[in-house]
Amino acid sequence: MHTQRMAVSVLALLTLAACGTEPGSGSGGGGGDGGDTVQSDVPVTGVAWNVESMTVDGKKTGAPEGSRLEIDAKGRVKADFGCNRIGGEARVEGDRITVSRTVSTMMACGKGVDRFEKAAVAALDGELTAKLTGEKLTLTTEGGDTIALSEEKPADLVGTRWAVKTLLSGETATSVPADLPKERVPYLTFGEDGTVHGNSGCNSFHGRATVKGSAITFGPPAGTRKMCPEAEMATERAVLAALDGPATYTIKGSTLTITADDGKGLGATAAPAKSEGGQEQQSGDGQEQHTEGAEQHG
Image 1 (cartoon, helix red, strand yellow):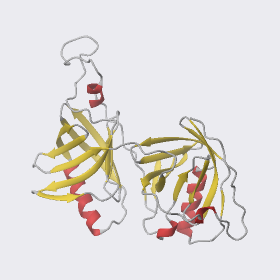
Image 2 (cartoon, one colour; image 1 turned 90 degrees about the horizontal axis):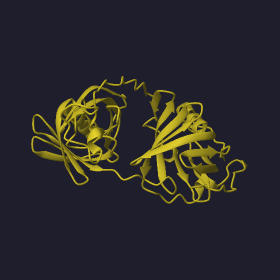
Image 3 (cartoon, rainbow, N blue to C red; image 1 turned 30 degrees about the vertical axis):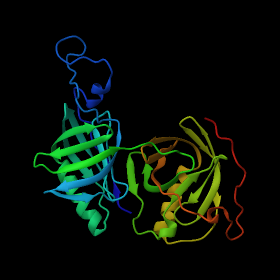
């Protein structure tokens, strides 16, 4: 596994673009309590954006699946262009966005994804002009290259197949190994009957999940008992640690983050549903599965 500690210091900003999203706020001048407020013409913060394409020197290239970008209310930017997790700081003033101090995980990527990622990271390094049209956002570099994005709609917790991409331990984020066999890539799906099932990196599992507001209480997971290479077993231990006991969750666009009370957690991305053929619910090596449902509360 390649571990990258995303310890990005918070930029001390007088204001952020989120200020411009407040209805009825003035034009920003003058004195009073709002004297230090810079109103934003383009409210881009606090929104999860799908990256759709990039145009460099007049040549348009579609973004790898799952590419996204977000600037939060504290001036932190997070991006994923299909392979590595990228973080940095962003200053938003009017329709100008300046990204700096970027850091990235160091996973090996496919040739096409790697080329797009490098071009996108290079485009983000510096000042960008933002133009918002409805739910579409265009970022333009000083050299005229553009990144096209669209507002990401939140996925549903229940019924979505969540592919686990990141393992969390406090402030440390560890990427799931990119070379896991396809059938052992960890994922989870929450059922309407208050259960959760999936694959934890080696074995399939099934358990209870009681959801109330932003909290989830996981029952002890049960599953098959196969042995796998150590990288897969290490991933499995980390996944199951996040799915045992009380936890909180957030969904931003297509990204789910689950954090247990002890700081263990995972980050997952909504993936197209697949026909699972019931394989996650079958027993292996005589190991009994938890099949009883649990009530889900709104």
